[in-house]
Image: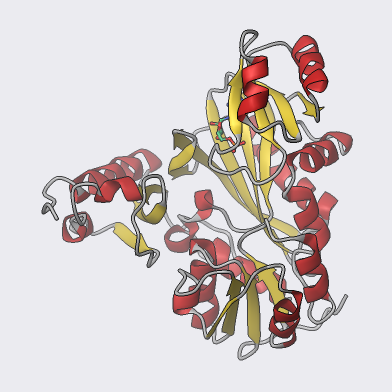
Length: 382
Ligand code: AMP
């Protein structure tokens, strides 16, 4: 693999075109790089702030080839691209993280099997490829549990809670596709650790972030998380060790469940993550700049937190009574507004987020929630 440093002025290729790519592109352009984005869509959150936007299918390997030939390095903001896409790209430019990392992280069976074999603490699980496997898993692990499709699951999609009574219905409801059957964890807290690893192989992390979900979609993130020093140390070490074990060059998010003094990995994302959006405003180096530095072979920046912070997602639901009152949310001087340039505010769609910085995490959370509430206090009906 080439260890050449890719310097400002070079073009960086991004597979995927959502808000993660948008914030990556903003960080990259700020440092004088050019950004080419590739996805099936046009006028995308990433494309709007890129130098070049390519709208083509991930299966259009000629288009992927031309894209990779036009950049110095390829990274991604969306891990569900076909393996062949990453392979073809890698013939023309380094792909960071490598396609082998994508291959593992885009499939829950491969991901959990890899982590369990490497000795990492994952939620107890069984692989399910038939209804017989499911019956066996119910016998072995008991209920309640969660049945999750192996591929294409995010924000709670492709998941169903399993009790003794509904195994057959659960199997039908996920479409009888390969899945993992996971024990239901009665967790106290969900947390994540964003880590970064550059070409020299030394991992860094941003500490522990608390995540609260509503309807399986991330609602708020709070940093630093209120966890014991033992859990903090364990979570951070695991995140670094997972990066090493997978030889990731880039940024990775490891999501955990914390139950008493135990910690379980829920899932991995081999890219910047929604729970790390607060690093854009609250950290010396954001997760997006860090991804850029890592994939370009530059020294990594400090992950130090400038101030405690909290992030609240803005879903399309907020538009149900008309355009949200942006000025009211901006009235708080330590709240930052981020919007992703998406035209259609659908229910559950991530349209933007707010970040608040404060002297402590509790105040940051209060401020960000207050600011979000103000968005819909005085909306003008359409
Ligand atoms: P996931 O897409 O796997 O991150 O799941 C979405 C959300 O569902 C998680 O953030 C949890 O809140 C919940 N969840 C998923 N798996 C489990 C589990 N094994 N036990 C308890 N809650 C879970």
